[in-house]
Length: 109
Image (cartoon, rainbow, N blue to C red; front, side, top):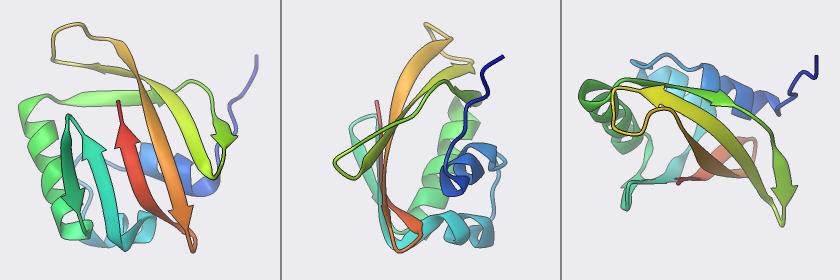
């Protein structure tokens, strides 16, 4: 069996509980981090926390990383996303840009 090895920071992101508190998110995301998901941008850790809470309230899901590939400073991680939404499960690519040991940008799509 081939075990996927993700950078610790990215593994921590995927292991976050759905109701992750601000302290947990601050350990993963830079203060000025940006998350782009469903054609919306969420800037800063407080906005990212609100996005996660809203997303989980509307459509609870789990994401299982399938692979990882780094190109030009961006780590692309396709993940199987399963939840209460049409078309579940589906694969969404999570693109991580890391700066100073924390996620500076995350694009999901």
